[in-house]
Image (cartoon, rainbow, N blue to C red; front, side, top):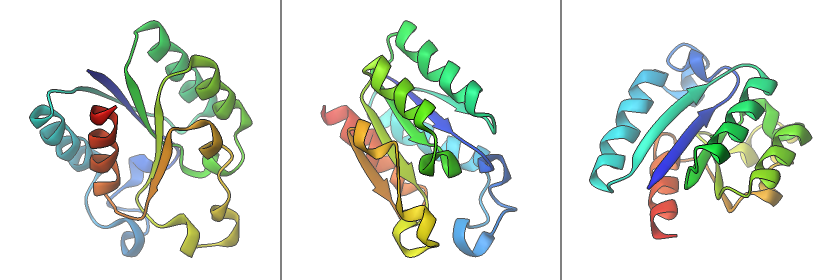
Length: 142
């Protein structure tokens, strides 16, 4: 099984950005954490992070060509307004799980709306790094 993990805007600032919400661990720490769990599940995992909407869309398209079995997507702020990312997910047909480290429903009002959730298999929010781990397990189960 091959899974692509995509992290969107500002995720490169993990460990520095709002540590009260996101903690002190870095994006590299997150990737190591996911990799360890993926190995136990016999999942090949690849990572991509970008602050640019078009790059995320291009990477979703590439995942289709690469025949990825699933995508774990933390689209960051694009979650709330990127119909282009939504269309890319829907257009590729790849099973995608939307994840968020924080509980987007307990934060600012605008964060409670996800335009990408309706085209995703599901959404996991509020469990920090474990949001990604739960998504791995769910993709593995099919």
